[in-house]
Length: 174
Ligand SMILES: *[C@@H]1O[C@H](CO)[C@@H](O)[C@H](O)[C@H]1NC(C)=O
Ligand SMILES: *[C@@H]1O[C@H](CO)[C@@H](O)[C@H](O)[C@H]1NC(C)=O
Ligand SMILES: *[C@@H]1O[C@H](CO)[C@@H](O)[C@H](O)[C@H]1NC(C)=O
Image (cartoon, rainbow, N blue to C red; front, side, top):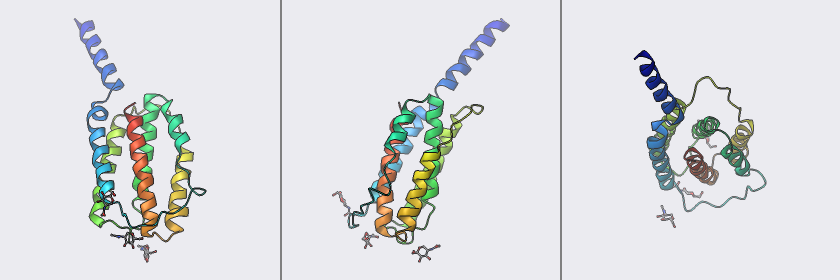
């Protein structure tokens, strides 16, 4: 009898650590809300700025992450969400969107990051994502700071972040 109960418990735990309901159910809803919100924040009148030799979208980091374990992918996703959060805390005096949009955005993205963290195993060694951190530093310094946090600079950042949210969503559901 004892053995059977133990077995049931073990199976149940194994099941819940392999899939986390929150990732299956809620992650997608947060991604959709964030993407919809970002869409409303678009400014059609900004000038396209050519920063192609300053910041490259880190496609190769996503390609690399897609080959990692589920656990490492979740860690990568949480890292990107944290970086986006930090970026959106920077000076938005001249950004095109109202302050309330930023508050909603920060609120949603921190909840999404917390949800992902709740689905991660606590004990595993995790890789650092230094190259991703460097990329976000370049956005902060060479785009926002360098262009005095202008509407154009923020529009560039908004579009980069939109692609990140899309890629992160694909990675999380793969
Ligand atoms: C910006 O352009 C898009 C697509 O052309 C359009 O759907 C949207 O209404 C425009 N937004 C504003 C504020 O003009
Ligand atoms: C959109 O961007 C243009 C160009 O930078 C700027 O002049 C305008 O104020 C911005 N619109 C809003 C609503 O901030
Ligand atoms: C935000 O940036 C604008 C324009 O560069 C500047 O005038 C303002 O003082 C800055 N605000 C803060 C809190 O740093």
